[in-house]
Length: 395
Image 1 (tube, rainbow, N blue to C red):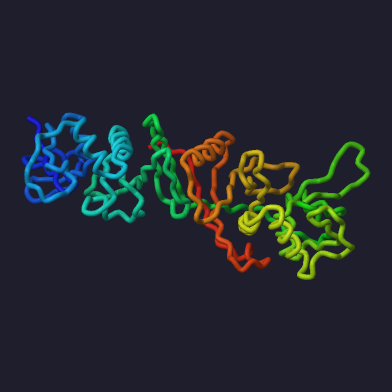
Image 2: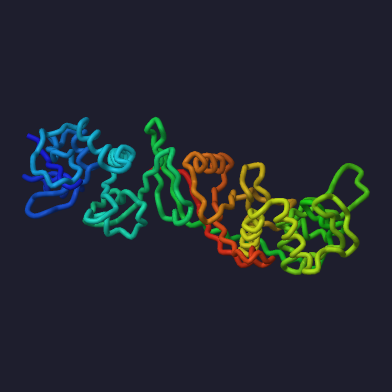
């Protein structure tokens, strides 16, 4: 005969031989005095669904935690599930993830006190900890800190590193993502050997007589080419490329065309210097995102990687870790999307980005760029950037 549990104050107590039957052998719940254990709602629901509990006796208020001592009839899975969905936040989606990981062979605990998983060093937003296969709550070897997310929820980008995201869609299918800190470091060794001069146009800079290595080895800009071209050595730089080169003292401006398309006089490139002029133009055409993208571009170059536009992939940048020459260019390894530190992902947005990156054999990286509010040209140079890698996971 299967035991019956009793729901009180949001948890289910089971007596008899419950400790040996459920905790010691199968990792459910937490031990109390003697052989009694306490189960979380999702654990009790899973045991009810499997037929391992005969029922759960509810408090007269449905287990919502009043002082009444009048017990109702023992509830089966259906009634207990509905009562729990009404009483506990996000119970339905958390139950689906718990049951799925149990079916995959994992022992799990709620990641909160007083449950065994409450001792794990995980973020407050984590719902469960799943232990390594073969490990139990006693051994404490956590494999996945699981945060459950419904398809229509949103989740903050900051602090996601180290979590396993379990996204439950409207048809109750579950998609798992691993969020980790990204390591974007390369071996591209190139520093411009000489200062070059360009013309600032509305949304780019043209260098008319660029030294060959600037493009061929540094992969800066895009050559102006065409059949029977009479002009050689001309390249177009994006504003982030030009601003970065100017900040390093490797680019000056000989002339500028303002945002309205009117040509300014020779050398009229703002009194504060070329970097300030280019940053000001970037902010004019792109708004506040320019500072964040420039900050990320700079960090990528400082890490000896080569960032190029990721427009074709719906990202800000694609990265090359090891560029010796553009004639022997490797495949890019990452797609990088720049977001503000307070950005909140929708699961659909996250799924689209990760699926696209996987489809083109790249790692999806989000750069959380925190730029100072002083408004100066150095604000992007002093920014803090947190790198977040997110990919599909099969537990």
